[in-house]
Image (cartoon, rainbow, N blue to C red; front, side, top):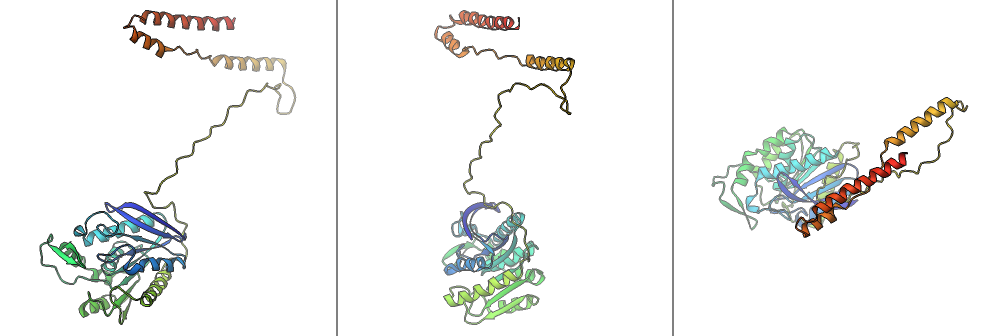
Length: 346
């Protein structure tokens, strides 16, 4: 498995990414929670990437615009923007021959479900405690809202509401595993009941004693095992070898110079012979020799260079006084060369 850190423009943003490449054309895109980053809570995504790699599955961790190492301000985050970025990354990897699955946590899980509804080629989705917005947010769209010690605009939750993630989950044909965390401080009983009703055709499990994040190492290991097994199960059995890597900003090797074939020195021509090996007649041989000489005659010899630059400098230095001398020497140079060529022809 190889690890590549790169940055690429997705959805109009410069998005930093970490690719754990297992080399088999199957990739899981991790979608972090609100106020989160590509490592996941307590490095959850990092450990999940290692578990997937053991199954021959690649994984991609990235930071949404305004989060982690990405540019922008968290205040400018938007739910639709999150979904579009996930879709753009998934499209990029699909275009390069990968089978793609999604794994999200909290708001990232809700955005992953919405993205899968937009992109039917997604193989499967694993959602850890998806955070749904079941009611409209009455504040003005630009008004600030504090979330885990950071500010974002009210429009984030208004977009999350109008996205109707629960309805998308109900209509989704892509296999989905929803992990309901019974100690989730952000999801009430109504939210959990809505997910259970809307995901009747999917896999929904309730995990007692689990919060939305901040799991113990043992709890995290159980989630990783379940998620890796589910995602691996729904990838295609065979995936064609992926094309060139999708990363953009990696340093590229300079192009190697093309080696041109070296012209070989002309060898004395052997006596022309027929295909059967018999020598050609004297008449034919003379005509062949005549054609060869004519072809050689077409290659005109090159005239030796005349140092125009030197005479131009002299002309400038002398204020133009050297110009007649320059013209006379140039004419004499051409005359001598042509005379030498005539003498050679005679």
